Image 1 (cartoon, rainbow, N blue to C red):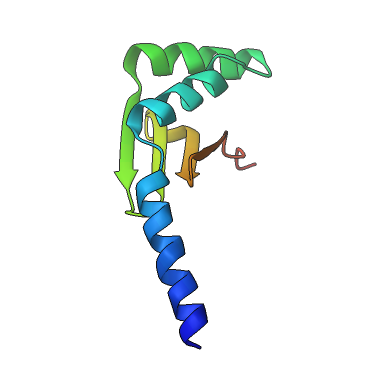
Image 2 (image 1 turned 45 degrees about the vertical axis):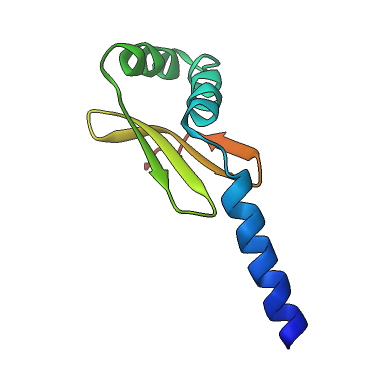
Length: 93
């Protein structure tokens, strides 16, 4: 039991020191925005560049970065352990 607790503590400390910072997250989000799959996503990317809201949230062992336009999330990124994963949320039908 002590070994498991020690491993969890070590993983939390490693996550804290290796979480991506805001410039890394912004770069990954911009890469997703600059690669649209259709015309609508291209226009959203242009709108986000001109008037989009960007928010970086620090969760100590992970980070979240989102790009919104008119209260719609265009790109959401999660990062931890030097890795960043960005995607476009699915549109509700």
